[in-house]
Length: 120
Image 1: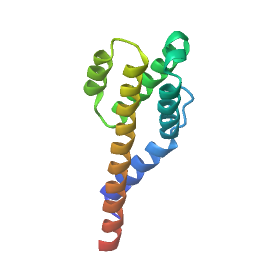
Image 2: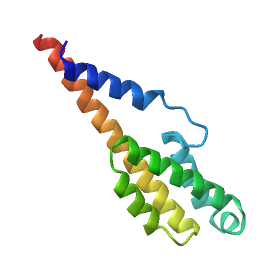
Image 3: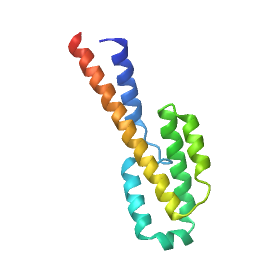
């Protein structure tokens, strides 16, 4: 097995071993988007919008850090200044896209690892 295969396995294990209560999981994002769309008026008036926003930004920063896109995470953070349900939905959709990107990268690394093991 080559060095690159070991690296891809380490990266794969790193991505799927993180279980932090301060971050949203992929399934949580879908649930939150639907909940906000259905209860837009009540969420706007409640304090929960700030808690959701804070945890969403922490999730976004963590995903950007994992993908070595720290500057992009900071840029996105500064982009979402106004806090309302529509902006929060846009932020959650962007986080969802980062989860999809991360999954695609992992599939590519897994395919490379499988190909290298076949060649050796």
